[in-house]
Image 1 (cartoon, rainbow, N blue to C red):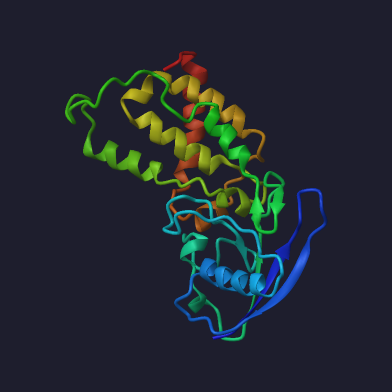
Image 2 (tube, rainbow, N blue to C red):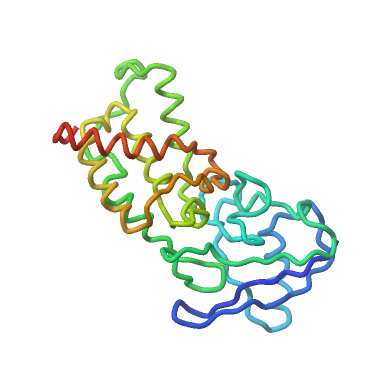
Length: 248
């Protein structure tokens, strides 16, 4: 199959950017979007032209680094699927596919399809970790957790931090991301000692992003399938800390 890739090119954050069209031939429907970009870059380098900059790491839907906007939708046409697992079979032969970086005022473009997602790191830095000494690896039964609690914690821990939720939200809210991190840690035994402090600090850090209006676009693009209830969980954790006024 053949495609025309219409790609956003931008030299630096303070530079003006624009779309450039590149024809791409002899690609198969089994190609991922990133493999198509790899092939295009090989051709650009062979022609002595500058390759397209884009982020990628694991290419298995785990690391969250690959996010781009495809035809106006974060990650691409298949719902709840990261960019690295979107395939060309989703497009018609001969189609023009528009690729651009995640669009959000909180994601300045670094170069081409690469954006700066440090705002998400600042939320994690505010409390998205366990700072107490958890000791050596305990036996599995030393901290009793029900099966339902363990499954719930794993569901929330599935967030890969790609930031598509922010890019999809009309307000640029990071509440789905923050709620998933809070609910994951509030469910685990060692992390509960900082539950209140964590809720206060992470909620405050997330305020640099926009407010949530519960539109739900974030859920439709989330590769981890984080449910909308994570946003309610963020508000619940914050209220819990307000009433208790305690670190835990």
